[in-house]
Length: 141
Image (cartoon, rainbow, N blue to C red; front, side, top):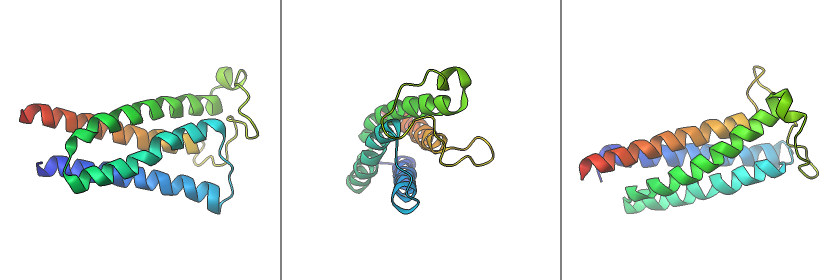
């Protein structure tokens, strides 16, 4: 495995680890209860930390397919969740999300940065890096 692929795996691991620790900080330290969509995003982000760590140790860049799939699905959920928070036409028809409403904003930094926005950013970084890795592996063949 070349150095670009190795560094890309490390980058994906760092992004997913940061996102995981951030979500745990918000729920366990700050006491913000995750809504249903937040749980789905966590279900897709948390495994990326473990699988990229194992792939990095094994020097297995082929995991980029898995990280691309997880991050694209997670990114779509994050985008929808962010839309529920920020777009009136979506928030007015938002489905009931259980005890915690999915339209709620625990944070709203600079008027647009919410928890789903942070998750979307992480999923986008992981997806872009995963597709970059797939491109590098295709060129190496």
